[in-house]
Length: 211
Image (cartoon, rainbow, N blue to C red):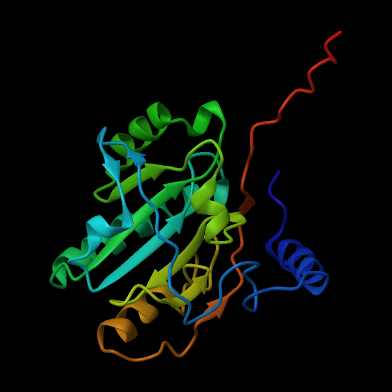
């Protein structure tokens, strides 16, 4: 059963109160910092991808997401619409979805099936077994967004918009951040807490001591 949004928010506030964060809500990154480079992430297209491959894009939107979180599933249609908007607006911005989860339901094969079912027309890649990219960007939830400007500096961190379930959206944080970055301006809202499911990791079984 899904936890009510207000309980997620309350638990998040308690959590951040006990952590020394780089940004308001991110434990690693803060606004204005250079984005960590990443490479060799395998995509659903069977190719290896890197951040530098998107050098021709003025703005890059990174979305840490997955197949299995209800909140991530809820934004899938909005991701498809966002990618279409980027294409219609001159293809100056790129959307990259990164699946950090290390479980079978979020395997590359499962991602390929999900992308086909939902009509994903954007880059969907899988983070490595060490979740190095996810850790470098301080992503702890799915979905969680990072917006990078043309200099590949962080201009936005956090939620997609102001409605986790897609109902009655009144503020589109990521879209607004992209528009500001394309105009060479600073987003009015640069950080908002992400609301979703915690990034999932494979549980490592303890090995018995060898004699």
